[in-house]
Length: 245
Image (cartoon, rainbow, N blue to C red; front, side, top):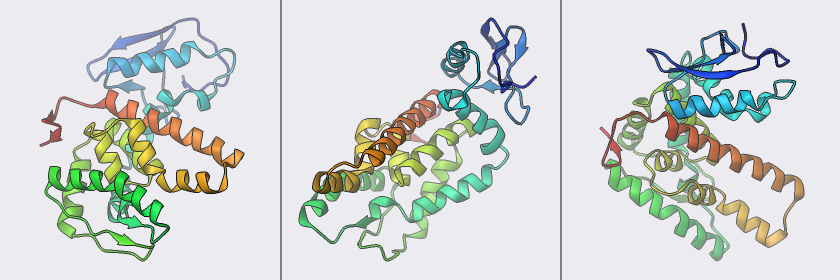
């Protein structure tokens, strides 16, 4: 059966431990992904979160309000089968990171960017033995190949489930460095999200808040926080002194 049948048909939702991880049962039937893979996740707390979403279904399944299920489906149906493509895509963010491109004015925005972004770049440089080229404006600036290779190796060690959360952190923030900082708990998710929207926050203060833009920002922030929680749930025992070896 498919776990994405339109209407609720089950009474009970349970979590079952498997050799590969934890699966979800609707009554006695296992949940499957849209691509018909058996929905098995690596962590009990992740399985419990997914189970809560299925228990909360009233009459009709709405994937829009089931982020844990969606992320698990993505890990199994998309990230795993297309892992090399996902890594290549995210490597592009490492080369064109938001934090590398600074405003050339006004002075207050320049100062805010430096205050929020310089500590993150300094941390990454020290933690991974890399260097970055920072520029003003939007003209492309090349990054050292050795630095990009080192950061990509950090990502390539992630499991499919970890990579799913990491992907969303990077794409939502526009910053590979922010994604790595979240991976290693460099700052809270709230602080990292605030760093990713320094420009937007400044513009809102200058020109006022647009209702539709504010609604989109709220949704993006919620998605970023979920991605961080999903990544933390997926983490395996492999972090030594905050750095993967």
